Length: 287
Image (cartoon, rainbow, N blue to C red; front, side):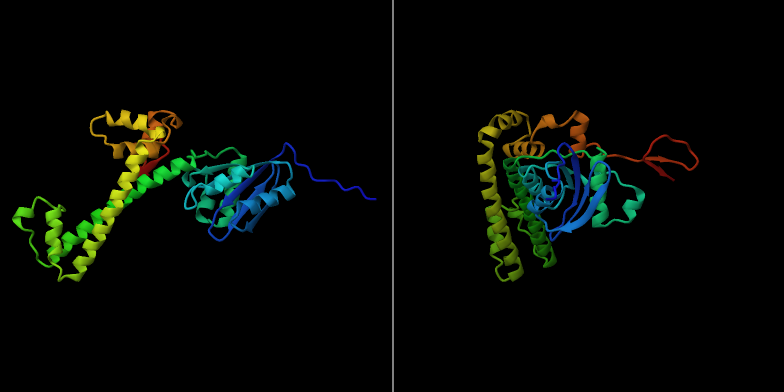
């Protein structure tokens, strides 16, 4: 009888880079010493884990993919299945000039896997499911407010297009009940009626979302922090919830510069020098 040697990768690290897609994933698998293969698979974490368990049983699985359209559900699923996964910002992945000009799904997967093995990837902070849902709620209200503003601008533009002057008594009461009633009185304009219907619908959605956010702010996980933030002049409950759902945990920032960078308050400005002038800065714009 022949003796069959079973595969055993106990204690070995296996590095997986994933380029995610809606219909398929490109996956690159590396060991410490060589590249196993790059292949296409269905966009399912379970399929990947089954492949790993079959070909690299008992190994330590280390995986990475870019943040983006698919959010963090892949991270959550892989983590539940025993894979150590990180999500990285695409701009933070070291990229060679050749890779930048010859991009495809396979090369992206290989790049992620190699950088993961080299320890060059910086993982993003991953919020919990409840934190993500709270952030989505607050962001949705902000998006609805932007749509409301756009709708109002369209209505005012239509009034100007038809040469309709706003009565003096309503000039300083835009979007009050009286102003809306006056707009409704011009019911012979079907396009304007459609915009007013849209505005009414958006206002209903915004009111509902605002109530939900205010209710959320009274929950134990937010109430004390909201109270402290609202003690600062100019910060309302809604503003406090924007700050709390976007930052989530202030301790995840190394220092004030890290926080300012995250908030977009410390832009990276290139140094402009003249031709022939010596400068040690990396980001230089030569004129």
